[in-house]
Length: 121
Image (cartoon, rainbow, N blue to C red; front, side, top):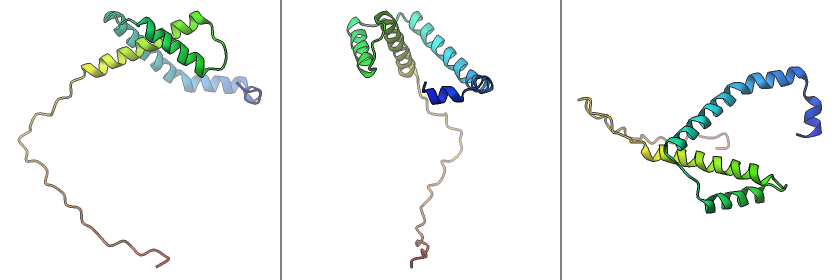
C-alpha cells in the first residue's frame, strides 16, 4: 500500500473498512471452501505440466520473486477451483419450462416514428 494511503488510515477507517468488507469476504471464503470440497469429492487433480505453466505465468506477471512453495500451492488451488467451477457449469442442465396451456404472446411489431427535431434543425 502506498505511503499516502497508509497515512490516511485511522483506527476508525480500518474498523469501517472491516465492517464493509466482512460480508463479501465471508461469502468468498464459503464459495472457495465449497469449490475445494467439490474438488476433493470428485478427485480433481492438477497435471504437473499445467501447474508448471501456471506458476511461470504468475511469476512472469509479478515482477518480484515469490516463494516457490507458496506459489506452487497458490497455483494448485487456483487450478482446482477453476476445475470445480467448470465441472459445475458442465453439469448444469437447462430445461425449457413446461407449457402452461396459455397461448404464446403475440409478436409485437416495432412502430417506427420520425425522429424528434433537434435544436439545430
